[in-house]
Image (cartoon, rainbow, N blue to C red; front, side, top):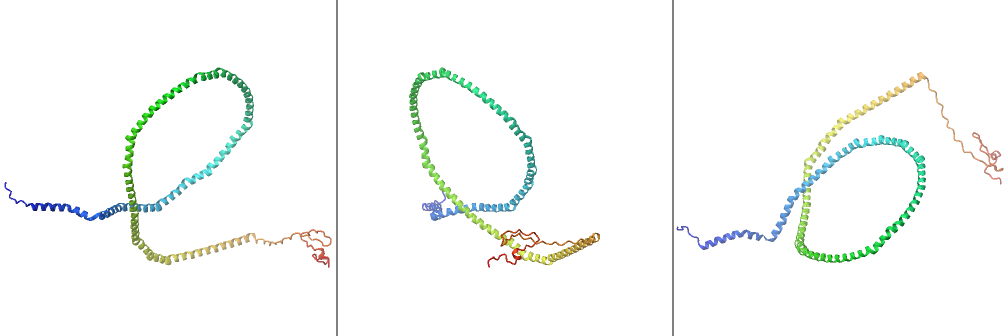
Length: 390
């Protein structure tokens, strides 16, 4: 076969391969051209944007739930709780208190009085006048019988103690001193030797096991903890602390954003709902209400008050007329009522006084009530308080 196509020149093939290599390496050069500063700024920005995108909606939803919960608590739950509390007191507490105060307490007092009269008083009388004398008599009898039995028991105890001492204690002491003590000492010496040998064997086995476990388990675990787990834990702690700080900052920023959104919505509601409503109340409803009050309500109120005054005056006149008619009928039937004597107010009597005669020095008794006492000195033309000397 003959190749009809013209073969490319070697220089052209080399140029094409070089161009392909340049195109493949171009993105790497552009990425390298950005530099470390751009990469270092791009990564925190992407992290902050991601956190804000994830945290801000959650924070806004949380703030909305908090506002809804407070409104529900103040507008629904708290009044409902007060109503339920009042119903609970009216349905349960007050009937139970009345039942306790007016039924249970009087009934318990009556039952207590009956129990005192029917049980306590007879029991006290029976204890005082029957059981106490019988108990004293039985105690006296038991005391005398107990003294006799105690004397008999002391004699038996002395005899049994003497027999037990010479039949049991003395042979047991001899057996302990001359048989059991030497045998025990020999067994103790043998036991100490056996224990020492067993201790040496156990110590050697324990030493071998200790170093085996230390080399096979403790040292690898210690190396793993010291050179792997502790550094990884520190790195994870640093990363977790930084993530927690970032989330905290993001949560606070989301709070400010949510507050701004809430204020914006509040402003929108105020200018779209509250301000028109207030303007309508102030500019439309208030003048209409004042006009209705001045043109309708006040004249009606004045007319009602005038009618009330007229009715009261008519009723007062009717009462006065009826009173005068009753007085006239009573006067015709029973005559004029007897006039009452005016009350004479008596003057209070002065306290009795004692006067001393200047010449005799005797006490004079006070005059009787209704009489006027005249001193002797005055009747003789002398002044009571004047001295005898010129």
